[in-house]
Length: 72
Image 1: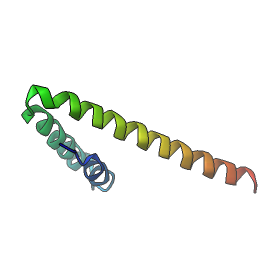
Image 2 (image 1 turned 90 degrees about the vertical axis):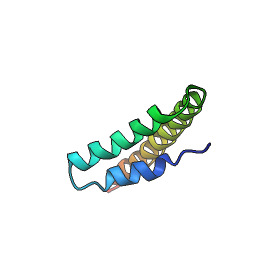
Image 3 (image 1 turned 30 degrees about the vertical axis):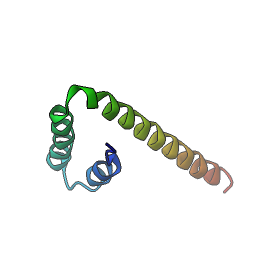
Protein backbone atom coordinates (compact mmCIF):
# COMPACT_ATOMS: atom_id res chain seq x y z
CA UNK A 1 0.00 0.00 0.00
CA UNK A 2 1.21 3.50 -0.81
CA UNK A 3 0.60 6.17 1.87
CA UNK A 4 0.03 9.82 0.94
CA UNK A 5 2.13 11.58 3.57
CA UNK A 6 2.26 14.70 1.42
CA UNK A 7 -1.49 15.13 1.95
CA UNK A 8 -1.05 15.15 5.73
CA UNK A 9 2.01 17.38 5.46
CA UNK A 10 0.25 20.06 3.40
CA UNK A 11 -2.84 19.94 5.57
CA UNK A 12 -0.65 20.46 8.63
CA UNK A 13 1.23 23.36 7.01
CA UNK A 14 -2.08 25.03 6.20
CA UNK A 15 -3.73 24.31 9.55
CA UNK A 16 -5.28 27.39 11.11
CA UNK A 17 -4.08 26.60 14.64
CA UNK A 18 -2.29 24.08 16.85
CA UNK A 19 -5.54 22.23 17.61
CA UNK A 20 -6.15 21.55 13.93
CA UNK A 21 -2.52 20.48 13.49
CA UNK A 22 -2.85 18.13 16.46
CA UNK A 23 -6.04 16.63 14.98
CA UNK A 24 -4.22 15.97 11.68
CA UNK A 25 -1.34 14.31 13.56
CA UNK A 26 -3.87 12.19 15.45
CA UNK A 27 -5.41 11.05 12.15
CA UNK A 28 -1.99 9.83 11.05
CA UNK A 29 -1.43 8.07 14.39
CA UNK A 30 -4.87 6.45 14.17
CA UNK A 31 -4.10 5.25 10.65
CA UNK A 32 -0.87 3.67 11.90
CA UNK A 33 -2.64 2.05 14.86
CA UNK A 34 -5.30 0.58 12.57
CA UNK A 35 -2.72 -1.18 10.38
CA UNK A 36 -1.94 -4.85 10.76
CA UNK A 37 1.51 -5.39 12.26
CA UNK A 38 2.95 -6.61 8.96
CA UNK A 39 2.03 -3.28 7.27
CA UNK A 40 3.44 -1.04 10.01
CA UNK A 41 7.02 -1.68 8.87
CA UNK A 42 6.17 -0.54 5.34
CA UNK A 43 4.34 2.51 6.72
CA UNK A 44 7.40 3.46 8.79
CA UNK A 45 9.75 2.97 5.85
CA UNK A 46 7.60 5.14 3.59
CA UNK A 47 7.29 7.80 6.30
CA UNK A 48 11.06 7.89 6.85
CA UNK A 49 11.63 8.19 3.09
CA UNK A 50 9.12 11.03 2.85
CA UNK A 51 10.66 12.88 5.79
CA UNK A 52 14.19 12.48 4.42
CA UNK A 53 13.08 13.80 1.02
CA UNK A 54 11.31 16.77 2.61
CA UNK A 55 14.31 17.60 4.79
CA UNK A 56 16.58 17.39 1.75
CA UNK A 57 14.25 19.66 -0.21
CA UNK A 58 14.06 22.16 2.63
CA UNK A 59 17.85 22.13 3.05
CA UNK A 60 18.32 22.73 -0.66
CA UNK A 61 15.80 25.59 -0.64
CA UNK A 62 17.44 27.13 2.44
CA UNK A 63 20.90 26.94 0.92
CA UNK A 64 19.62 28.47 -2.31
CA UNK A 65 18.00 31.38 -0.47
CA UNK A 66 20.99 31.79 1.82
CA UNK A 67 23.31 31.87 -1.20
CA UNK A 68 21.17 34.46 -2.95
CA UNK A 69 21.07 36.68 0.14
CA UNK A 70 24.85 36.61 0.35
CA UNK A 71 25.12 37.92 -3.21
CA UNK A 72 23.29 41.15 -2.41
